[in-house]
Amino acid sequence: MPLSPPDHPSPNWLRDIIEQESLPSFFEDLATRYFIPVAAQVAAWRTEMNRQPLILGINGAQGTGKSTLSLVLAKALEHQHHLTSAVLSIDDIYHTHEHRAELAKSIHPLLATRGVPGTHDIELGLSVIKSIKDGHFPATLPSFDKVTDDRKPVEYWQQLDQSVDVLIFEGWCVGAQAEPPAQLASPVNTLEQKEDQHTQWRTFVNQQLQQDYTELFSLIDKLVMLKAPDFECVYHWRGQQEQKLRQRIKKADPPSKIMTDQQLARFIMHYERLTRWMFSEMPGRADIIIELNQNHQVKRTAGL
Image 1 (cartoon, rainbow, N blue to C red):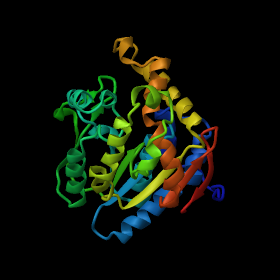
Image 2 (cartoon, one colour):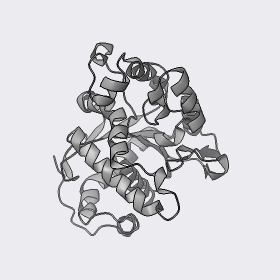
Image 3 (spheres, rainbow, N blue to C red):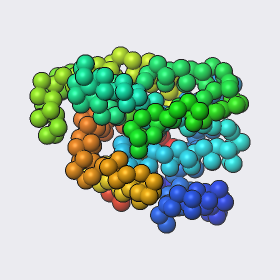
Image 4 (cartoon, rainbow, N blue to C red):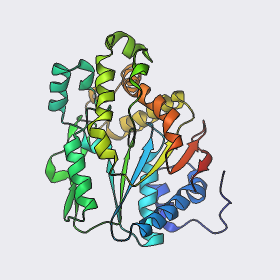
């Protein structure tokens, strides 16, 4: 249920985020009512961890606002709870473009497209998170460039010189579990129907969740889910993100590097099966659920 309305002005750091990120007018109230209380709960969890860094998973379909939530949590932990944090996106541990091309050639052509389990460098993710969890610093956080569809050179990775109290690990499939294999037989969209007729691609993706991803996600101490109301909203919200990306880089990069509406529709189909499965099974085990409505505002919460 929604929390009680705040009885004090929003902090300056929150207003700065709203201005810097060009967020809508309702975001100040949303963050004050819901996101800042999440930060308080994270701080309490961190206290329970004693000296070990807390690994906080943030799950949410494309366009739900994972990056913005992560930013607010990091700032709230710093300013209101005096805790240090860092943010790692699962997008930043994608395999290189070259490696995904090799997967597409040796396993299935659909693996050329980043995003689904099997397109991430799990060894890299394990190395980074385990290093932080074990208190080994300095450490570096990898970075991926979605415009070039490739990993950035190491010299552009973020350097963490000192230990952090909380590592926020965010991503659309963070914390996901494998789907029952029997459910793979029926395609969920035209991409699967036409380009994965023998279920080879989706079976491989599901097997990755059963294998290497299980170890990666086992490092997560607490899981927060931003839950969209339905997959149609995911498509709409992800489209809005693409529009913003077009506006931001149209002067610096050729238009061919930005997806058309048709390309975007096909791209999102890669994520549909696992997204729908997470809608079904993850709310039963996430530590905090932030359920969104059609207007991208919070409908209800659980775990706070």
